[in-house]
Length: 375
Length: 61
Image (cartoon, rainbow over the protein chains, first blue to last red):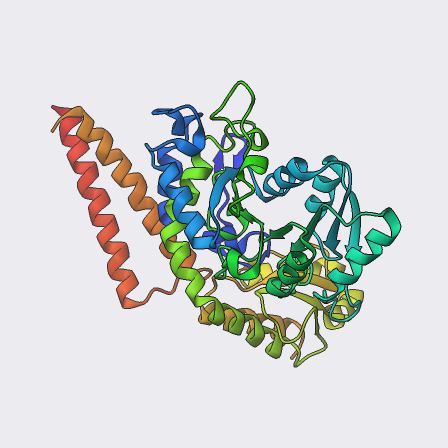
């Protein structure tokens, strides 16, 4: 079925989608209803009061207050995405110094820092097979930067859960070190907030960047959240000189349409689903334990503490060598079984996510992988 | 029924479709429905039909 030249997208309705990029942003029916209703350009501006974040009809201002409480922070602004939230912090803080980041950081953190004029230093991961970030290495990183540049970094960034291995880092430990050094701490929660409970004050974060379309069941475009601690609002949420209601870092008003409404509509569901995080982790661990019965090895920290699973799969790579479809066989074998989300052609290393699947679906995914692998 | 009710019923149907879509999402890929889900699907279809009938009656007058 087509919409003009566009093919309809029915991947969530017709298949089990394992793409880690997409599982946490799968919308609720309420989000889709909000998107339908607010689909037109500037739809949230019917009752504009001068800026997006102070709009009360629809009640964006009230929603942002609720999100602030939910994240254990003090002030919140909507952004066009998590990367825009990170960039906003970096840009407002940067005076051309440096930033210390984790070695598993997302590329968008790196380009945001570069754009903000910050010199990037990294805390290395532990390498194969777990690629873990050790929080105490932040202290060593700070000292090394001081030794090299004469100054401590202007900002520290931690990717709470990285998008390559799905490793979960104890943000509280990093937060404590940052607080001890009086270095502002930016927590990138693209893969964590909206999936699991996060209390910014408890972890000692000065800033939290979130991705609505990655982990808060929002869609209809890009949407992010920037939450900050009391004391930073004059710097990070500073308004324009001649536009006192327009925060500079979101260029006055960020997401001005359906995606923000989708985020708001899904929020009650998100507040509830984070309470089920332990079960989501159990599903990931179960799938790993099943898959490792054949020649498959999970990469990243063990046991898993997140739904994003990176796998090393010699079993499929060996089959591909003699298969008529070569490396594409796995993609088609899975698709024939109603499972998608894998990059076509990949048989040696790939990422999947069990987030939001029922136990029945997870069991079926495990059976399918084992069957294809001859297990 | 006012014309604005026709619009409201159109939205209601669009929203009911999203509820139906949600059931397909939760039961992918085989859509083997449990008793409760069958009831939900049939209730949604009934409501869509009722809305269609109401709109049909209104615009035919």
